[in-house]
Image 1 (cartoon, rainbow, N blue to C red):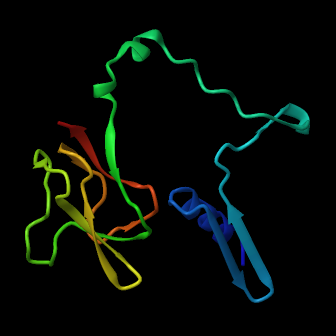
Image 2 (image 1 turned 60 degrees about the vertical axis):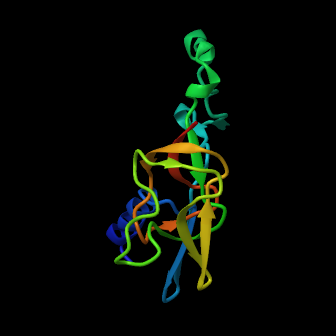
Length: 148
């Protein structure tokens, strides 16, 4: 495997949602892993410095009402997202729809089982954050909503 192929693999992994990746070709084996907070290396190759602390919260943001915080419907499992019950049926919900507690908003397929995902509170759909038939991870936001 040449350096161009390795560099291409690194770019692909950097732009994906994968956290770890391994690849082998013949006797060559490559393992790549993303760090949540990569260390900062000091000039001259000194020991790694801890990642920078997050910026302090501005008072204006702290004064914002809690109702304006973004709310999400997240994936409870790893699987494939389906916005409708069948390819020819309309989507369960669209942007601007008002959804009731217990209403089905999508289907997640996991291990050949279709799991209906229901909303846990009354809300309005502000954005659909994934596309139909997209693979989703546990805890990944599927919809941005505004509680009613």
